[in-house]
Amino acid sequence: MSSRRWADSAEPSALEGLAYQRMSDSPTLKHYTDWGAYEPFLAHMSRCAEDGFSYELGGDVGDGGTQMGALLPPDESKIVAAHYAALGGSRSLLVSGRATISLVPRDAGCGHAASRHSTITVAPGASLDLKVMVGAGSGQLDLSFVELVLGAGSAANVLVYLRPSADAPSASGLRAALGDGSRLNYLLMGSGSSMHHQDDRVVLGKSSRLRAGAFLASSNGMRIDRFLGIDHLGDDSSSSATSMGVALEGGYTVVRGIVRITESAVRSRTEFTAGVALMGEGSRGYAVPMLEVHTGEVLEAKHHSFEAKPNADQLFYLRSRGLSESEAKSLIISGMATAQLDAVEGKLSEEASSLLSDLMSRVGLEASLVPRI
View 1 (spheres, rainbow, N blue to C red):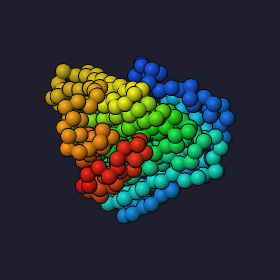
View 2: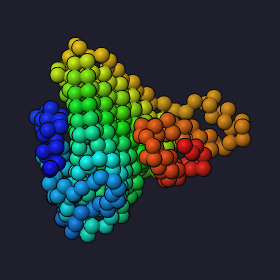
View 3: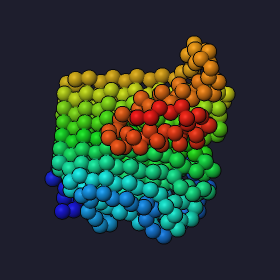
View 4: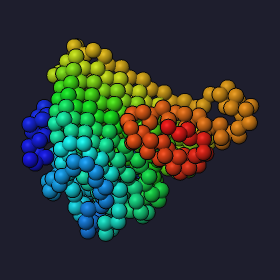
């Protein structure tokens, strides 16, 4: 059975909704992402020699051939068009039972742009643990996208870790369509590059559930802009999303997005929280969660945002216990981050804890202060 046949039989409302109601970016997009950083690379595009992901597969995973999904149309943006122009290969995978998949970037013989793409379809009733690592060599525009289709009653845990090269721009994203009664847990972690744009979009079918968490950090010239789009198309659907970020000395972190509850998504509920902590000279951050509700029969729709600096009393208390200012900041930030790790379950939550130590070190914080799960 092909991925398209599974998709058509499992959740036509989700896929059709994405095809005919493509989510547009926030009108303030250019205020957050410096698209000029990408132009020198886009002017010298060449195709990669082969698929840019290495695959580690476990459990009930089959080959879906070379068919690509419909969740990332080439005309969505200039970056997506460049992604397809540079793409040397793409793998489609079919999950029929219980499976684990790990995607790791590798050298695929690319020129100015390294492009990676994977399409994964989860059959009705099946389950998946998916880990995606983003970022590889230096000096290239790094582009990585994953499409995920969940059949009716299926479940997926997804962990995406961003570790792009600091000396070139990068962009990545997850596209997910949730079939009737399916469930997606999604955790995004990582740091920025010279300019990283993370674009995640999820479409929810009838009685589907989304739980999304994120922790993103920047320092010393790193920049990262994360956009999360959630479309409720089916009735009785539910989403809970939290995007947290920190901008340290010279860092720039944006966490934003929009949740839309359409007219057909009656009895649905959503909660979207976005917040950024600013620490150090020259740090900038923005938190912009937005809602659009097109039905009066919604059960709950709320959003929260904050942009803050660490509490002076909190820092004083920690320093009075013998911690340096750097250690005190590290402890506060690791606490913010750790609160996001339960967005995924089981082994992926443990892996997220290990990756958090790497993230803390990458932005100049004390990795030893990260609590272990």
